[in-house]
Amino acid sequence: MSITIAQNSAHPLTVNRLGYGTMRLTGPEVWGEPANRPEALQILRTAVESDVNFVDTADYYGEDVTNRLLAEALYPYPPDLVICTKVGATRRPDKSWVPYNTPENLRASIDNNLRTLRQEQIQLVHLRLMGHGPVPLDEQLGAMFEMQREGRILHVGLSNVTRTELEVGLKLGEIATVENMYSYAQRTTMQLPHGANPGGEEVLDLCEQHGIPLIPFFSLVHALPKELNKINEIARRHQATPAQINLAWLLHKSPWLLPIPGTSSLAHLRENLQAADIRLSEKDMAYLG
Image (cartoon, rainbow, N blue to C red):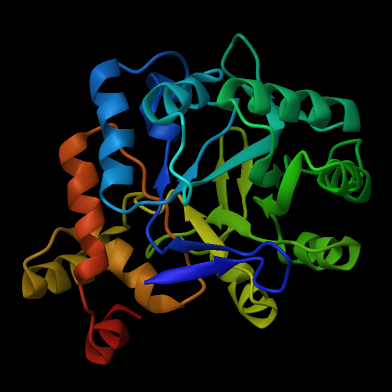
């Protein structure tokens, strides 16, 4: 299963429909070095060897831990590998998440990503929105599109967006992808300590209408008890784990979904990748809802 990013542009990117998110390779609270650095590096290598060619990262993971791990493990990168990064946020020493989204901030983040990833151009960059701060969306996106014209960014996407914000973004320029929280049990807005995370269900139909891949993060968030009972039953039928069924549900929900499950365990990586081979029937999907 594959999906095409920016299919109507001069430079479309085709990737396999199960990617890898690097966030969990960092230390506790997405901060600091991994507990097992050799395993973290091996996870990245194994993912690519297993036909994962879409990897999600950010320079505020760690800080900058996952970008450095990617370069160490995979550079020079395979020609078909798409590395997607995010800008618009940063971390304070107290591990809090704060906006970093003025045009100057965004340019500094892109410079940092290019340097650490050892790239001359980043294929896909998500502008992560951090609530309604003092910097208007059109000013943030304007800076992103300017760097795209300069050749520093190939494609621009949006992350953590409401439906209204996506509609505004589509009027300002080409939005290649959207990255929102989405899982079987958590489909709409979820309140987290650092703010609200809009859900994938709120924008999925809009993404489908415009041919925009929707990239779910937190796709392995713990299911609620009622939903977990249903997932467990389907998992038993398919001799699979609940996590695998969660991923399979996303893959069957829409051809425009590109899950990026993350893990710090090599065994769990292999388990997650097996979800792509699970075929849920129409009856399974109807039961899951």
